[in-house]
Image (cartoon, rainbow, N blue to C red; front, side, top):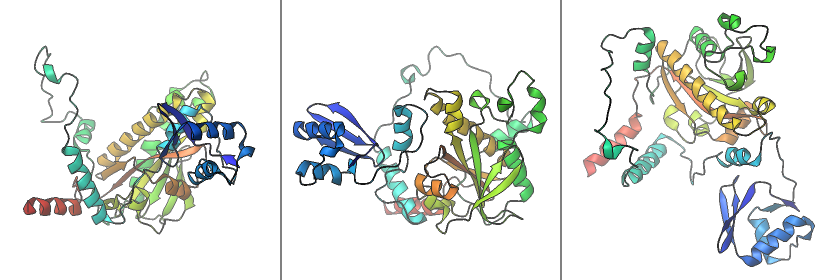
Length: 360
C-alpha cells in the first residue's frame, strides 16, 4: 500500500484536517482516525483492508494500491503544493457550450454583486491630501505606442477570417523571439546561456517561458499545435488539433471557439530552479508570462487584430495536448488573436442579460 503524496495536514482543533490538494478535497479526522493515520504514515505495511478506518482512507484516496507517479520538482513543497493545488479548476460542471457558460457566468456575477466589494485602502480619505497631476495629453497621441495602448482591449467575439502567416511571424518574433537586433546588448562577460534577449524582461535572463501556437486558421499553415523555436524563428509540429472545441480546454469558455489562433505560454521550471534554488523564483514564472502576454497583445493590436487572454485552463487536457504530462515544463496562460467586432461580451451573454432585464 502506498501513501498519496498530494496531501498535507492542518491542525484545526478539535480536528486534524487532511487536505488533498491535487483532488481539491478535505477531511476532518478525530483522535482515533488521526492516530491511525500517523501509524500508517510511519509504516504503510500496517495497512489492514479489513479495518473500517483503513478502508475509509483508501476510499478517500489517501492511500493507493499502485505507487503514485511523482514528477521531478526542484523546489520545496510550498511551491509544489501551490502549483498542483491550483490546477484543474474544481467545477461541479464544466459548461459544454456557450449557452451553459453564459448562464453559469451570469449567475456567478449576480452572486458576487449581491455582496459588498472590498474598499480601497484610502477610500475614507479619497479627496484629501492629494497632489493632482497635469491632465494627460491624449487628444493627439504623441507616438504609435500611445495609440496602441489606447486601442488594446479584451475582445470576446471573433470572425472566421484567417490570420496571415506574415502577421503570425511578426507576432511570434516580437513576443517570444530571440531578437537579432539586440545581440550587441551583451558582451563577452555575459555567459552564453544568458545572452538571448527578448522584447520582454525575464527573471535572471533565463527566458523560462515557451510558446505553443494553437493554429486553426492561419494562411499557409496546416491546422495544429506548433512549438515556436525562439532562437531559430521557426515552428515545429507537436500535435493535431483536438476534436473538442477550444473552449473545452479553457474551462468551458466557449465564446472563444471561433478564435483563429492563440498561444499557450508555458514555463520551464527546470530552467528556473537550475539558477534559483529557492521556490520564490516560482513567482517569476507568472511575472514573465504576464510580460509576454502584454507584449503579445500590444503587437497584435498594432497589427489590427483583436485579442483575448485567460489563465483558466483545463490543465490536464492542455498538458496532454502539448505533450507536457508530468513534465518540468508546464502551461500557465493562453493568449489569442484574430479578427472580430471587438465586443467585450459575447452575443449569447448579452442576449441572456437583456432577456433577464425584460423579465424583471
